[in-house]
Image 1 (cartoon, rainbow, N blue to C red):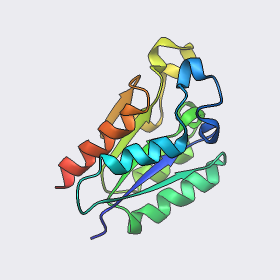
Image 2 (image 1 turned 120 degrees about the horizontal axis):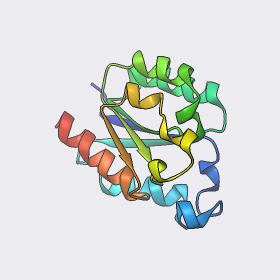
Image 3 (image 1 turned 120 degrees about the vertical axis):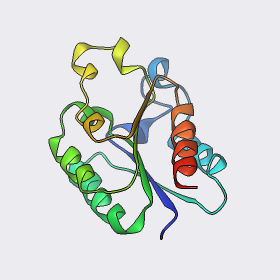
Image 4 (image 1 turned 90 degrees about the vertical axis):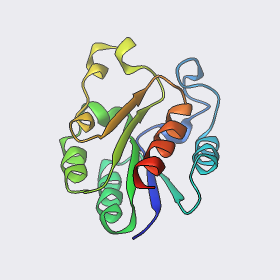
Amino acid sequence: MTRTIYVLNGPNLNLLGQRQPEIYGHDTLKTVEDLCRANCAEGFDIRLLQSNHEGQIIDWIHEARHAACAIVINPAAYTHTSVAILDALNAFEAPVIEVHISNVHKREAFRHHSYVSLRADGVIAGLGIEGYAAAVRRVCSLLG
């Protein structure tokens, strides 16, 4: 069995550290990757991916069915719009943890609904990039 955790990131997260730092902070996606690796238990690996395209994220979820032991996903704006990502995640039979850097429940009303949460085994919101570390630690503890 693979011990790779896919860490998937949706639209605009390539601009992490530059876009709206008052909401998302100054850390970059590279910092997120380093943090995930540092919190990964021995024997596990991280594959961090980011796309601004819904279809690419779906393709990675499909790939993960055979290549990953878990998915940590920050679908960004697709959280609130993508039934297609939900359907892809429903075909993935291992742990899924949903992560949001900001507390989406303190933001605009449209951000309060998540399609991804219907499949997620856990949801972390509002911890900044530390939410990714918590998600990776949880996956590692679930899978031993």
